[in-house]
Length: 400
Image (cartoon, rainbow, N blue to C red):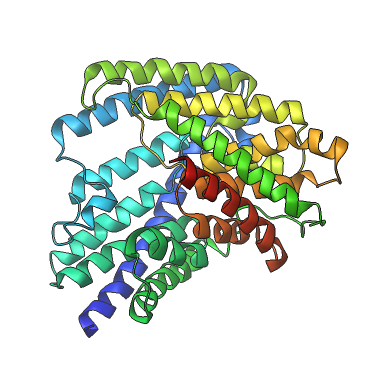
């Protein structure tokens, strides 16, 4: 591989780190402005906002989502998914349209959309890599690798998870594991991580004490994985035909307004459903909810995500998947603990989040590393996470 290629990887890593910083700051500004708080977490800010303010915020979010994406589909160039761009690497993605598409995702998540924020920095980083390719000529293999590395760099730029992002690229996009590919991905991801840490700090998304991992956590992890596979199957079946109208249709725009208004009503009782799902995970990982509370929060988040997807909103499913996994596992944990050796709520919730993420997003190895890095837990957690994700993955593969 040529020097030009390695320089391109480094440049894209720097750009992705800056994109991660910019989008993170923009999202925080929108959150503070929308819900009227100046300090504390998003969960605390939304909880202190009056229910009527949450409803108005989500109604406004529906207007932005519905008519923003209607205009993008009506007047912009056709969107190209990241996976498809790897099949035509010299063309990449439409730069301006993709930038606007990513900005809409961040704006709506900041306003309370229940979808994730991780797709936006990935898409914007791939768009930046596409713009780079139009000025610096690379061959097809190099261009394809640059786009894949840009996508992974965008992921680590907002979540500070370099190991998981590296495996993510290899597991879901590159697919061929050799020394050159590993080096290329690692260079881009580590560069983006370094830039992001310089600008945002070495952030830990879920700062937790070291989790207790009793022997019972191992059989529990297997059951949690099976449960996550069942929940993932239900979710995929229920969302298979969404959105309810064609993209670019004015009917879909008005549907978004109504759907987000309903999400706002739900948020009156369950403020934790707003945003990508971090709020719910924080409660579960801290062991702050009962089994009944977890079940109700799971149902509310499931409905909120379904409504957003039905209305044609875009966004990631990484953190929403984690939240559905953590709340689902915590919901039936009291039954387990009533008859079998006890498993702490925090440990069970982290295991459930990893299992659901790995199955829903089809990235089992990435999910394990992602949870380890998000929580900064020691390697002792690796075994139950692998058991949970592996059990769920095997059941899912056999069911397909």
